[in-house]
Image 1 (cartoon, one colour):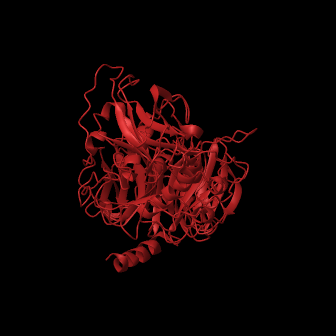
Image 2 (cartoon, helix red, strand yellow; image 1 turned 120 degrees about the horizontal axis):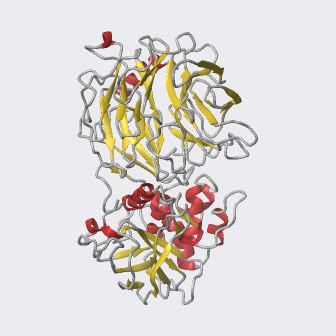
Image 3 (spheres, helix red, strand yellow; image 1 turned 90 degrees about the vertical axis):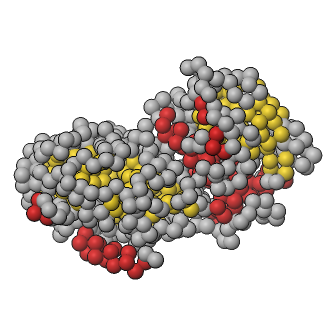
Length: 626
């Protein structure tokens, strides 16, 4: 579908269809930091299996590691045992490594009321930064806190409860801990969390159902059905409840019906799902902040999510989905028919205006906001360097900004201050053809999706504009681009270019060879629910995610880091069939592994909690693991 047709059809559809935890906020008092090495705190709580206390379980407090993903956690203080009522108290016989150390509790084994120890019990809850713990009156560890922790911390969690991140992704880890508290109330062990924004819609029944499935193993010791269904293809069977939850979170389409079919006669957590889901992804939807037909989205270094709205506003949500922009969004500066958005390395936000009334003869501009949402590009935005009906924008590692100019089939390059670098007529004339997407590779070549070309193609432009190369990409009507940084063994490849082909409902991939050239590896993968994909992103493991504009779902394909390149990991209808997506347009991944999708048709943004591998943000080139 050509972009102008897309505008008309989507606008008509819109008209017809629009009808970190700070634990002190959970009732505790504020923590007063002590020395630079941290201060002692105490933790009191209760361990429950379903609605039954678990006695004689070993509870340990940990600080998450910083030496690698899923490693380096430090045990704090002594192991304590729960009493007959499941109560435990960890006294202040320990010191946090620092006030920013992320703390969590793990409980092992115990008697859930059966009269004997159940060694398969492994439950946890994520507490948050030590400096924010305060004197929390109570913590509940149960199956709900375990589900919330396993999904939100999926990228950082290893078997047996080891949590850690790289030293360069402390922000992503902290944000993931905060996300836990959107899903569960740490004090009561119920969902939703005490810090869940008012604009959020949680999959409460799905979360409860997952907790009930774990509770069967916890309360009865009958775990064989859970462990069998939670064993991924070619993977190892779990031996405890936390590892089972982690397997389900990481392989949400695997044995979904079998997991749902596990008998839960008591079902301690209510309400629950009435039928088996297609997958076990947890999707939270957010409204507000000026969302009005959102298109492309981007994530900044703090984990905040920015969205361009077609009807002339920009929305900012916090990492927990709280609106940071007003109910009308950030406005002004010539915003009109905005499709593209990018955040540069300084946190400055660039937005395309396909039409600019009062400037550039109405041929569009780029409107720019600082990280606080303050307009910095004047009344009409920047439009030098040949900007002409721009519909997509990308930032490179040098701080320069590329614009895809649909109107005259060219590209523009602007400096971080908005000064034109490209010629007054733009670059790439005669080779670009209706470019609608742009992505930047490791050598700062910009790649453009030529949606209007007779034969599907992509074009690269060198950083100085002196070289333009066009390569046939396969598929039909490419609408989105994403680039990984994975090198192919025995070659000079610097990464791979992935193209979402709207009309053919496929995804193509090309191997990039470092000088703006590329070789097509596949002219079109299909399956996994691909249905007119538009937005596309690559995660930190190289896997590929696409938003299905007509399918109202997400597709995941194995990326170049796998021997099974292009293998569909999502079910036949895609992920999120129950996530209330509405014409999903853009997709972005944050440093916590959360995947964010803009719903053009519903004026909402949906977060798939912990679904992907973390990506360094903001995106100023290929997707990299932070």
